[in-house]
Image 1: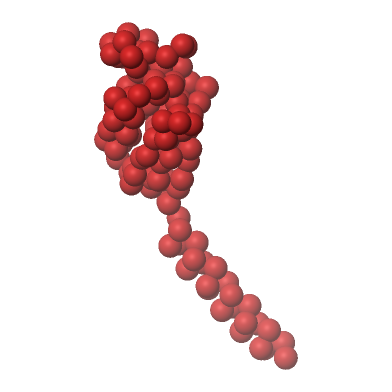
Image 2: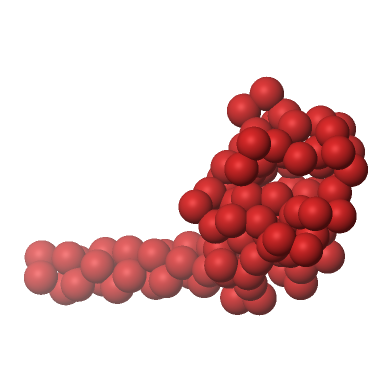
Length: 112
């Protein structure tokens, strides 16, 4: 009986290890932005898609939240927020880069 339990435990450990290896690096995050229009949406999604490791970025203008799928082995939340702020928009609690914000089209400037 002990041998059977040991074998079952071994197979479970191998299965968990394989599952972890297949999922390592795959990440998902949602970031609140200051986007207000379609131009903002395009700018933020384009900025994020230029970040190495980003698989997809989709901004919902109604909620102003961008959903990002990325490879955690290549990038992280701070780098994603930096990409958004460098495009001129806020990213959660991180303020927009002032120079980039000042260069936005007037309709893209939200109340900061």
